[in-house]
Image (cartoon, rainbow, N blue to C red; front, side, top):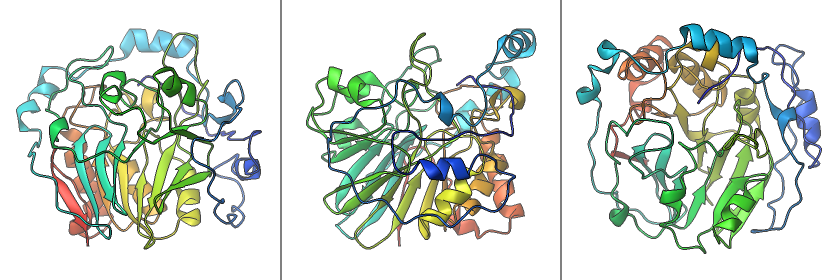
Length: 359
């Protein structure tokens, strides 16, 4: 999605929760060492009624683009690759296969494309930012098919949403779900689901958690923003999710994010992340997108910052959202992983539709 010029200042605060001191302590990624993180929050009740601030502009890591940025983008910004950048589209990896067999002690992930994963954890099937539509608003049709047929899904036990951009919150896909499906959403986004008659919507602020059938869902910060209409900029929150099963195994779904100080803080608060699902695409031009989208090298740094044992790239190879060549995110993330001296088998660079089981 579109975004803003680089800024080193960050002002992530929270007036709505007792954890706002965490944001105050993190106002600058270059300031003195952060204090020890507080213990994990007690899980909040599911589908709890909450009252939220009118907007969350105070959580932005960098200011939204102004007139000068839009003028520059109009002069020189390319939003799609040229013919050479699209030439590798037929080579994008796509290998749909059956979902792995699991039990309550199994953790497995299947990449459906973009930021949509089928996460099997603690006996639950969880969808992340489910987008099964062929098109999203303002974007060409997907260049690879959905990796998992909707009819092949087991019962969906929960959905987690990172933010309200159209490539992450897809109304046609969500209409396919039973309205009593548990939904975990950022603060302020519950009304969107309630208007569509979803009855079990849990909204969380950063660092808050809820629990469903033994699996813990923690909402964590991200370097991003929210907007769905002309009048709702930053009216809802944005972030990622840490899912923890009863045995303590953790999967971190970063949602959509730029690179920054939050990754280190997430790693300190949630040690022992077994797998990080991190975005690597939609990063060019950098001057326009660097504050909100990691490039492949930054994604590898983020995986190290959070202390993840493994990384699975996402947010590439599905929708053409920006100007980099379509296959470049994969080649760059592989090279960055190798330069970092990390075990090759711990980079789960899956084709669309492929699965891995956490041993």
